Image 1 (cartoon, rainbow, N blue to C red):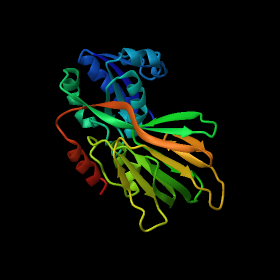
Image 2 (cartoon, rainbow, N blue to C red; image 1 turned 45 degrees about the horizontal axis):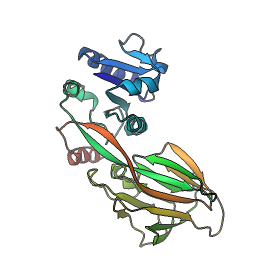
Image 3 (cartoon, rainbow, N blue to C red; image 1 turned 120 degrees about the vertical axis):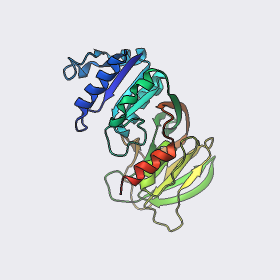
Length: 285
């Protein structure tokens, strides 16, 4: 079995934990590779190093070591290469990670093939420019429209299948997948959605209206968002999975829909979504 490891070395103790994961996979008879940029850190670990894209195409599985952000970042490459991804949690909540550090003994089950894959929905956001050019972005967690660093509200009109949903005055709007419903959307008061249920969750951020509530749209719906200029013409920003920010001009339109791309997360049958949810949320105190 060929394993491509993607570590987040900004996490405390990540290098040491990554060495342990490498050691265990090699003992289990796996070929372990990392991108060549990690060679100076793990040169005596027994792992191989090479061009990331090449190793990605050769791998049977990607193992992301870090928090949910590391998994989300790696998942986009995994989708493109049609590879399953296993998350080892070094972060705090780690909703997407299947293994905690104390669970590394279960790597033998993974190598033996005693696992399943959960397919998770992604969302596609298309920026339609006035000249009809289209820019496409893909998110596993969420698409957020906001003013960015400026502490001002935005005015956004939202339509579903060209029918008006509402005019929202808020700090922003979150469009989350079921996977992303336990992230920023949840913190903003949105519902938690079982990841087995495809849907798009729209959650207003600090809405300036008592009646503004989160909405859940059926997966086949196509949403469109336009900025409404009221008192100023500051730029709007679209943030994709908290990683990439795109400036949106007043005349641009944003279309949001379910993507045909789906992430394959490696899962063991020992715990289901609701057990993980209960453990993670109760650990917050």
